[in-house]
Image (tube, rainbow, N blue to C red; front, side, top):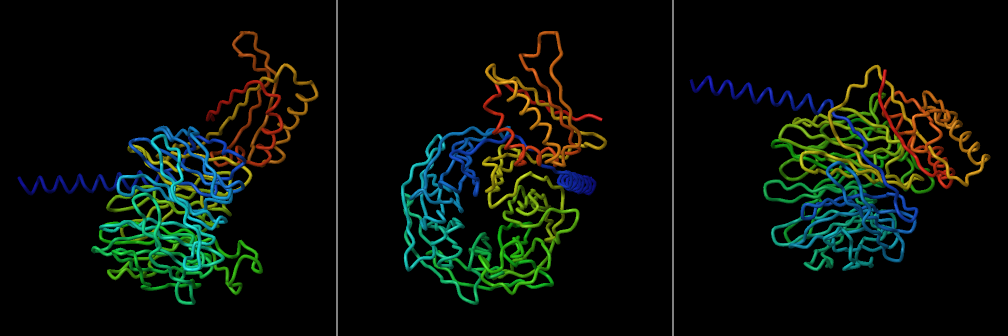
Length: 508
């Protein structure tokens, strides 16, 4: 009897694993909301935080150097809360990380062009209160600071800072209870370690020891470091780009997961091909050998070992990776999201326990992602928050859910308008022509028609013009929605619009 029970248990476990695998293989992104950023900001960096059951999103912008704060509800809807200026109105807030230090919630910000690390206390409503400024000195490497990583040890917490151009290297600061930073150690970049342009960092704890991993954008490689209880650190090993089993030219996002007993570090890259060789890029003798995501296995000493490569092809969107977020993990697999600048997409990937990476699905967002991508969980639901450094000046949310079967269907996008009473006939005719002309500027529009309301039932709510656009898939709608031509149209005709009703539906 006991053997029968054991057999049934084994079958149940196997079936549950198969079901989980099937679900993860069919995941897709569905946009839930988007909001404008304040003061013409661009969402260069995004992070999020849960505080006392409330969920907040922080968007660091370029331009004026501001941080926009939003609440995020369980449906993925954003609500603006506040806006905060950075030191000297510089910015952008290229690196941001929120964490709890001995009972107090803080947001740490790497102010890239302000050459400072700013510490903000997160208030109960999500707003921010600056409590500390740590300026760059000759002893630290926080000029052009862009990446932050909090490391919790047994008795203290530390903030690791990576910089880019002026003074490359790695620095560690002890985080005091009031949010102030005390310098512990800095390691200047040299020809051995990969810390020139640390755009990604990640921490693993293995057998009671703490290890930190950095990507060197200009160094074209990754490095591992042992972190000690007092915040000091030493280099363990370094791996450079090659043309065989890794893609590290322009090492960019760095993250990691533990699956079973295996520890992995995941590294993406925005290849130097996408930059001017004689400008920003320091080492111009690189070779373009494709785009891909590199998987490294971590041994017991914390060293990185090349393990697997997922190469970009016609079925994936991996060109110009700028951010890799872990959406979910269990003991057997992890689901990842890769934000891309050149492909202007979010690619979902699955990493199994053996360290093999495979594509799931992708969504073309309609805008390039530049460091601004964040995974956030509310209850059992997983969300992504994304932004762009480009013209859209918006922040968007996506829910990760099982893919809906749209086979054989097209999407109708209906825009119903009412113009203001003082809008002239010429203004209305120009607006209609501009709307019509979108199909010539946005090839993803598969069909377009419009007309003036002719209903006599009295339920039109005063809406007079109806425009119907047809899209073949979700990608096309996103590209249209965030296309510069569409945004320019909205900006142009917005002043003469009195009311609008938008409805979308799928049909055969």
